[in-house]
Image (tube, rainbow, N blue to C red; front, side, top):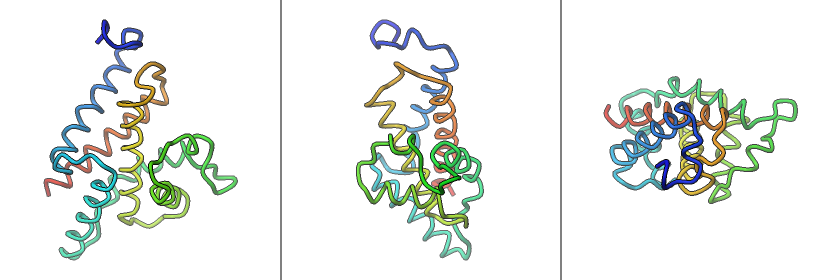
Amino acid sequence: MNQHQIGYAHLDEEDRAAIREFSLLWSVFELQALLGDGSVEAMIGYSDELAKLAEQEGHGLLVAPFIPHLTYFRRQFVDDRRSSTNELFDQINFARSEHRQLVSRALITLRDETPELVKALLIIVHRLRDSLFRGLKWQRCSKKQRDDLYHASKILMKATDLARV
């Protein structure tokens, strides 16, 4: 990697570990939860299926484990003074406007434990994945990017665990 990927040699071990962990967890999640289809639509369908199964079992989708990560991304992407998304959120390249609206609504207005929160987090994770795998890669890895990848990795672990239940 040091010889073949521009910028990789300049990363410190903490950066490399965050990228490595996220990449591996994405692969596991995509295989186990999404059956190899890593699209946003597959993630939304997965979340809907989990919510449906939980409802059939007489309870709601267990959202509580995701709340710390939702809180983190709210701090990243919401301007509380204006009750709106901020410039960082505007830099996310959502493939579809309905995905942008779903994430925005979840970050700004949803307070109850609803499956929409899990959908929103999975869409954020997908955007981080695209940015890492297809976009800027690691050429300008920063503490913020490491923190984003840390929370995305935790979301992937929790979502993968739900596939096993």
